[in-house]
Image (cartoon, rainbow, N blue to C red; front, side, top):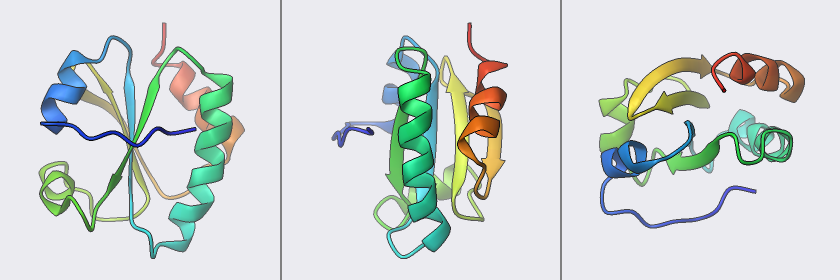
Length: 106
């Protein structure tokens, strides 16, 4: 389950992470984004401790979304050491998403 957190700076959150961070850029009104929420819970259970999942509401943080060129929702961006290393736009089933993420982990 994704944890709601307040942070001073998104770049600090990424830079200070000890493990890769998967950022889910979403909006509350976005139907496919709601589907991704359940998929991300499955991914989190399967990859527990190997990556951190962070959700960013693009309506609340439009500057972060535009900084990362988020044009479609949902958009997932995987960061390692503060740098984006993979990007997924749209809904991906949990098994495919886990397989894709595993290529970047460990």
